[in-house]
Image 1 (cartoon, protein in one colour):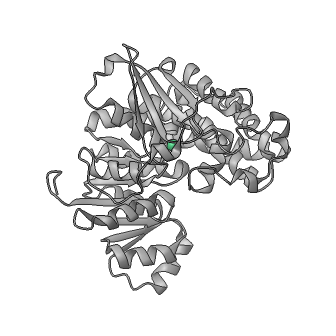
Image 2 (image 1 turned 60 degrees about the vertical axis):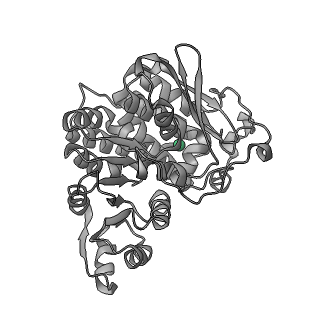
Image 3 (image 1 turned 180 degrees about the horizontal axis):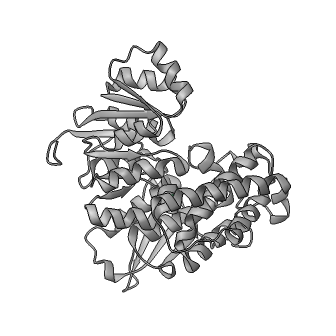
Length: 388
Ligand code: MG
């Protein structure tokens, strides 16, 4: 099916996660515009079953083998049912008008890369794919002509601000950050932060990995690296401003000092709907922003001493952006170790820095080398987490 068709054929990598569920919510508002091709889950087979009943996909993939067997035993779904990595690759090579890549973490890298090599349009929510393999993904996209539309609200905002503009006239991309739940917590209390406290985000409803990343501000660090690869501007043209109300989703400053901002309520369905209807806009029934009610918007500089992860990400960008794979893998292990109460909240950046100092990168990087570096960083970080 080509892109001029009124119906877009869509597959979703990770349809039972937070972004996957919200993507299906958006699609349910416009059933005549979209046809669901494939859906996937890792372990939430009950939700996947109910999604198959509602959206009638052609096939599903279940990443975990144990859950795949269980699903096969009890499902009434009559389409194709595949398992594991091969299943995800199969899905990524289907005839999709749009592949929504919303797996969490490094797991999304290979299927996303596969779709990009085939020239597919990818709506990317899996920021870790660009952080870990941004050089490879963007060069493959150039070769195949694949389009990447960011779902991440900041990058989606920048995409909207850049429409109709000459890239050469951009002087800065300014990513906004809510500052997370510990914006006003003194650094001296960081060592006592519990996982229950860190899992509460003031503005956004998200999965647990990204919520912890927001609490350490590594989420903004990952987004800086994501922006670096997506928009191809140097680290010196990227900046972060803390904006606790999360109404401005990001800004672009131009060479004449004029600055464009994209605004809206913090609701991920809005950037998702833009990615789904891009380059058009469809009308959706979402709550509207009332600025008079919101009253005021505030801004402050990030506290780089308190939120070390932000500095670590800037350093990676300035020294060698290919180190994103190490940063990402160490961060995934650090977050997991914190949730399992193996390390303290304030040790998350320490563990990432140790991995960045330890792991060496030669000239980057094909996918095998990236997978190997990811695995080796994970091994090192797991061992190190046990000694902290
Ligand atoms: Mg974001």
